[in-house]
Image 1 (tube, each protein chain N blue to C red):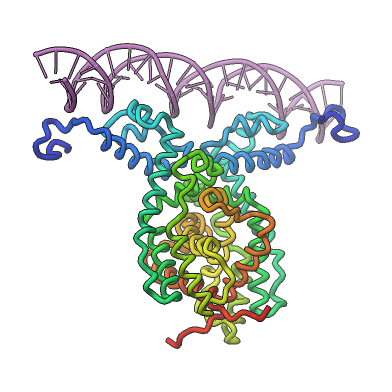
Image 2: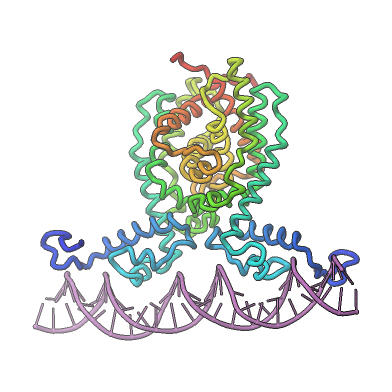
Length: 221
Length: 221
DNA sequence: TAGCTAACGTACTGGTTCGTACATTAGCGT
DNA sequence: ACGCTAATGTACGAACCAGTACGTTAGCTA
C-alpha cells in the first residue's frame, strides 16, 4: 500500500523533524477533536502517525503540552485567515454582511477547531491561559470590525451602540452554535443545522440578523 | 461541621433509595460538568456522595447510563421551566423579547447544563440518541414561539420569513455561546461575557437583535 | 419476633494508559 | 572516514480506574 511513496526515497524512512512534528499535530488535532482531552489516547495518536509515542514526548513533552500545541496551531490558522479579510472596500452594510458570511464559512469548514474550542472551554481555558503564544494576540478580524463599525456609526447608517468585541461575539455565537451543537439540536428538534441544502438559508439568516440589529430604527433615548 | 445534621436522626444513616439516587445524580451532574465524560471519575462521584460506588452501579448500571440519566434529568428541568412560560398575553414583539430574556436568564442560571450539552455534542449526542425519554419530547418553548410567530407574521409586524425552530436556534446561539465559551473568549479578548455588571447590557442586546431581525424592513422580493 | 428482601458497604481485579529507561541509527560537520 | 548529536524505536512499569464478587444490615411484613 505504501510501497510507492515518493520517487528517489529509498524506503520512505527519512528523518525529518519538522515533518514528524507536523504529522503528530495533524493526528492529535483529529484525535482530541474526536474524543475530547481526556477521551483522546496518546497511543492512538502515535499509532496513526508514521512515528511512535516516544516522539510525542520527545517533541512536545506530554499530553497536556501536545494539546496546547494543537490549540496554538489551530488558532494560528484562524488568525491567518482573518488577515486575508478584504471587505473594507465595501460600504459598511455590505462589509459587515460579507464579514459575517466569511466567519460563517470558516466555522463550517473547520468543525475540528470548533470542537477544540468547546473542549478547551470545558477545561476553563487552562491551556490558553498557560500558553505564551495564545496570550496576547488580538484577532485581526476585530480590527476590521472596529473600523467598519466606526465608519457605519459616524455616517449614521448603524444606529446600534455596540462595540467590535460584542459584535464579534454576536456573529460568532450563531456560527459556533450551528456547528458545535449540531448533534444535540438535531437529536432534539429533528433539524440538521449543517445540512448543505440549508446552508444558504442560514448564511442569509445570519447576515440579515446582524444588519437588522445594526441598522434598526431606535427609539429615541 | 456536619455533627448536627437533622433532629431525631440517630446517626444520619437511613435507607432512602430515592434520596440516594437523587444525591448521586446531583453529584454526577457536577462532576461530569466539571471534567467532561471521560474526565469524570466514578470514584470521585461516589466519594462526594453519602453512599458508595457500589450504589452507582446498583441504581444506574454504569458510567455511561449514569451520564444518560444526568442528561435526562437536566433536560427535564429545562422542559419544566419552559412549561411555566407565560408570555402569550403580551403583544408579539414584547412576547418574543420576554421569551428571549427568559431563555437568557435560564442559560445564565444553569451553566452546568450548558456544559453537559457541550460535552454531549463532543460525543455526537450518542446518549440522547440512545435514550427513550429524550427521544421524543418536543420543547414547549417551541410551541410558544410558533404561536407568537404566527400572530406576528399574520399582523404584518414580523417581516422575517423564519420558523420557530430557526428562531429558537438564533436565540439559543447567543445565550449558549455567552456561557459556554466564556473562558476562551475571556482569555482571548479580555472580556468576561458573564460579568454581572454587563448582564443587562447583553440581555438587552439579545432582545434588540431578535426584534430587529423579526421586524426589519425587507427589500421587496 | 422471625424472616425476607431491598439497600448498602468492603475489598479487590483486570485492563488500560500515560510516561520513561534504554538501545539504536541517520546524517551532518570536519 | 569518523565521530557526535538529533532523531528514532522497543519494551516496560506504575498508577489509575471502571466494574464486580461477596458480605452485611435496615426495616417492612406476617
